[in-house]
Length: 70
Image (cartoon, one colour):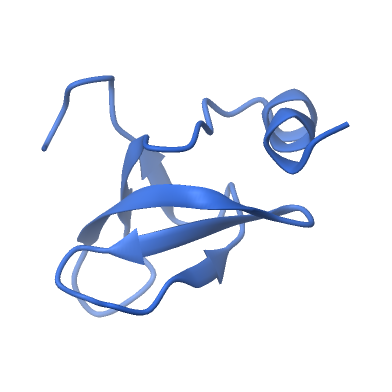
């Protein structure tokens, strides 16, 4: 089972490559985009950053509706 499919099935979250999210684990919430998956983690590039980092799919991640916050 692929990383994305596993995350969607196990954690019951709408995690798809290209999906917009808001990460609120830092000092201020930051929007970003899911770029892929590694093991049971999301790979997200936060807006304004070059580096892609890994995040747990349910820890302080808000999944935006399709077309939300572009």
